[in-house]
Each structure stands twice: as structure tokens, then as C-alpha cells.
Image (cartoon, rainbow, N blue to C red; front, side, top):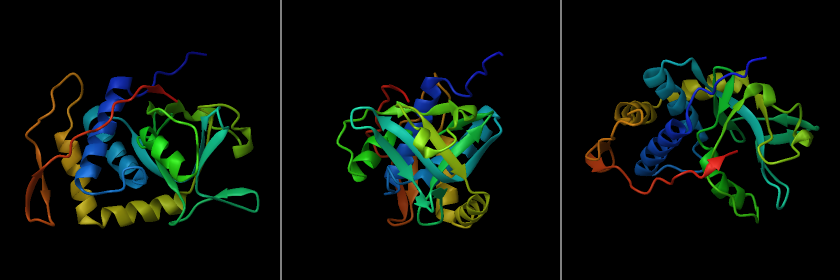
Length: 214
């Protein structure tokens, strides 16, 4: 069986993450809790710049992130031995061409620290075939293993609410307009209109680089 090609080269994934990180930081968003923005903006950007069939999906998720302390990051909750999600406990990712793409994954180090993890994690790309989705969270045995439980009703509500917020819709469109596929050069003079100050402001600096893949 021929192995499918991932939708994104590493350098493209890294640049998309950095652009989304930059816009979320400029808008004073929660960088490691902004999965809604990473997924929704990421899917839209893949549609517009790569002409890919990409969709933001909401639900519960878990990823094995460290062999050192056998740490698994959980997004959602466990109820009656089942994975569950709602507006207060969820994760969001992109499903595209048979792959799961998590543009928030480079922020796992901060998320792990919030969850009490002791191991030092590196920033990595997360782009894996959906066929590797584990059947249950107790099957996550080594780094890179993952398990997701999509919630179609939650996805509908969250996307509807996101679209109904002009500030977030405008942020997604601005990030997409700013983005350039590698090796094209990004516009260093780009400014984002800040409704709080009523004027354009420069984009935040300091988007981190990635060091590998999950």
C-alpha cells in the first residue's frame, strides 16, 4: 500500500504556526489555549493558499508528549470511562486529506507545564495520518501517540459562534492575507488594526521556531 504524502512540508507548517502565533499574540490572545483560533484560521488558510479540503474539528483529544515522565496531555474530560467534550473542555484541530494537523502543538510545552508536567518539551510539528488515531487513551504508549474524539455538535456550535464574532473573523482574514508560502518573503511592515487603540499596530515579534516532529 502506497503511503500518502502529508499535506504540508515542515517549513510550511512552521510558517503557518508562526503566523497564527504572531496574530494571536498581537491580539493579546492565550497562545497555548487558543486552539479554536489555530484550528479555524489554519483550516481557512489551507483553503485559500493551498486549495486543500481542510476543516476545523472540535472534540476531545489526548497526546503522549513525554517518555521521561510518561505524560499524556488531555484536552476534554473523562466521564464514565469515556472521552467527552463540551464548551468548557475541548480541543480543536484540522482534518485535511486524511491527516490530523494540530497547529497549536508547538505550544504543548506551555500546556504541559499548566498540567503539572515536569519534563522539558521541545516545540514540534504535529501532522499525522488519521489512521494512526488510537482506539482509546489507554493505548497511548509512546511519544507521538494520539487519540481524538470528534464532537460534531460541538464543532457546529463553536464554528457558528466563531463566525458570529467579527473580531475573530477579521483576525483570521488578516492572517490569511498576510501569509506567504515559503520561500516567499513576508511583509515586515504589515500592521494589524487594533480596535482598542483605534489604529494600526505592528505585529508582535518573537514567534518561536520548531525543532522536530511529534
